[in-house]
Length: 75
Image (cartoon, rainbow, N blue to C red; front, side, top):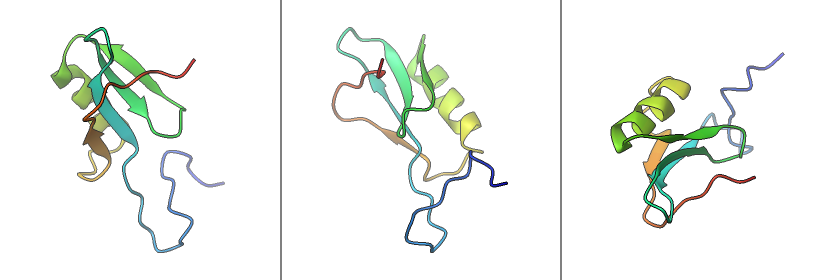
Protein backbone atom coordinates (compact mmCIF):
# COMPACT_ATOMS: atom_id res chain seq x y z
CA UNK A 1 0.00 0.00 0.00
CA UNK A 2 1.37 3.42 -0.96
CA UNK A 3 1.96 6.05 1.70
CA UNK A 4 -0.62 8.78 1.04
CA UNK A 5 1.66 11.47 2.48
CA UNK A 6 4.08 11.06 -0.43
CA UNK A 7 2.12 11.71 -3.61
CA UNK A 8 4.02 11.79 -6.85
CA UNK A 9 3.21 13.63 -10.00
CA UNK A 10 1.29 11.55 -12.55
CA UNK A 11 4.17 12.17 -14.96
CA UNK A 12 5.89 9.29 -13.21
CA UNK A 13 9.28 10.99 -12.83
CA UNK A 14 9.19 11.23 -9.02
CA UNK A 15 8.53 14.98 -8.83
CA UNK A 16 6.31 15.74 -5.87
CA UNK A 17 5.85 19.50 -6.08
CA UNK A 18 4.27 21.78 -3.50
CA UNK A 19 1.80 20.24 -1.04
CA UNK A 20 0.91 23.23 1.15
CA UNK A 21 0.17 26.89 0.60
CA UNK A 22 0.74 29.24 3.54
CA UNK A 23 -0.86 32.66 3.59
CA UNK A 24 -3.43 34.91 5.19
CA UNK A 25 -7.17 34.79 4.68
CA UNK A 26 -9.24 37.92 4.06
CA UNK A 27 -9.53 38.45 7.85
CA UNK A 28 -5.75 38.36 8.38
CA UNK A 29 -5.57 34.89 9.96
CA UNK A 30 -2.63 32.68 8.97
CA UNK A 31 -3.55 29.45 7.18
CA UNK A 32 -1.67 26.41 5.97
CA UNK A 33 -3.78 24.70 3.31
CA UNK A 34 -2.98 21.34 1.75
CA UNK A 35 -3.25 21.77 -2.02
CA UNK A 36 -5.41 18.68 -2.51
CA UNK A 37 -7.78 19.73 0.28
CA UNK A 38 -6.88 16.94 2.69
CA UNK A 39 -5.41 18.98 5.52
CA UNK A 40 -4.68 22.38 6.88
CA UNK A 41 -5.46 24.73 9.69
CA UNK A 42 -5.61 28.22 11.16
CA UNK A 43 -2.54 29.44 13.06
CA UNK A 44 -1.52 32.27 15.39
CA UNK A 45 1.38 33.35 13.20
CA UNK A 46 3.12 32.88 9.88
CA UNK A 47 5.89 30.99 11.68
CA UNK A 48 3.38 28.56 13.21
CA UNK A 49 1.72 27.92 9.83
CA UNK A 50 5.10 27.34 8.17
CA UNK A 51 6.20 25.04 11.01
CA UNK A 52 3.06 22.91 10.61
CA UNK A 53 3.36 22.70 6.81
CA UNK A 54 7.06 21.84 7.00
CA UNK A 55 6.45 19.10 9.57
CA UNK A 56 3.63 17.63 7.45
CA UNK A 57 5.86 17.45 4.37
CA UNK A 58 8.99 16.02 5.94
CA UNK A 59 10.64 19.44 5.60
CA UNK A 60 11.04 19.06 1.82
CA UNK A 61 12.23 22.47 0.58
CA UNK A 62 9.90 22.47 -2.44
CA UNK A 63 6.77 21.29 -0.60
CA UNK A 64 5.53 24.60 0.85
CA UNK A 65 4.89 27.83 -0.98
CA UNK A 66 3.79 31.24 0.26
CA UNK A 67 0.58 32.63 -1.19
CA UNK A 68 0.54 35.97 -2.97
CA UNK A 69 -3.27 36.20 -2.76
CA UNK A 70 -5.63 35.57 0.20
CA UNK A 71 -6.18 31.87 0.91
CA UNK A 72 -9.18 30.00 2.32
CA UNK A 73 -9.90 26.66 3.91
CA UNK A 74 -12.41 24.76 1.79
CA UNK A 75 -15.48 23.71 3.73
